[in-house]
Amino acid sequence: MGQYFDSEPSVTSARRVVELVLPDLHLELTTDRGVFSADQVDSGSKLLLLDGPTPTPGDRTLVDVGCGYGPITMALAKRNPDATVYGVDVNERARALCVENAEAAGLSNVRVISPDEWPDEVVIDRVWSNPPIRVGKAALHELSLTWLGRLGPDGSAHFVVQKHLGADSLHAWLEREGFSVNRRGSRKAFRLLDITPG
Ligand SMILES: C[S@@+](CC[C@H](N)C(=O)[O-])C[C@H]1O[C@@H](n2cnc3c(N)ncnc32)[C@H](O)[C@@H]1O
Image (cartoon, rainbow, N blue to C red; front, side, top):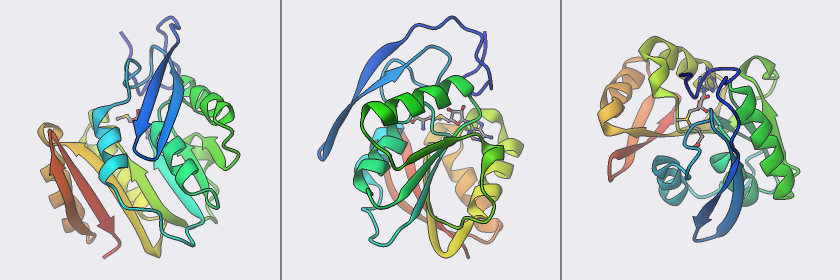
């Protein structure tokens, strides 16, 4: 049995459509086996979109780290029509779905890339992420440092992490690494963390 973060899922395809319903938008998104939370929009991602920060006028570059089939990417692109939203994922099937979902929603400001395709010269205004905790602590830390290191001086990152998957230990580690971390909220099984360069 493969993992949702495999680069090329081996499970047979079984596509379906799920709904992303938020107060300000309603989207139908295509998902598939072999990608994270294929049966419904993950409740952590939905919470991040409900309680995360409102758009900052002037933002140009937003990144959804670990975009999956794209619920966060699509919502950001709809809410920030003047920004370019990068959906980044290691999972090829997830990336293909994210491209398809952006096209179906008419969102021309979405770019979907693998992590190694990031254009190094681009400075990021906001990172949003439901990060892949299950890759293990070392890989999660490396991924966090990579993307947080690309934020501009006024940039910020917004993570949703399940409490029982180590949200508080990630929070403490980020502070030890010199970032400022504010717990925006704690609802249901999740914590929302706002992270800024220290
Ligand atoms: C918790 S899931 C969230 C997916 C999506 N944002 C959602 O809400 O449905 C984390 C995602 O991170 C991806 N991922 C794993 N390792 C990664 C890495 N090194 N860089 C970027 N994405 C990664 C996984 O493939 C998975 O799609």
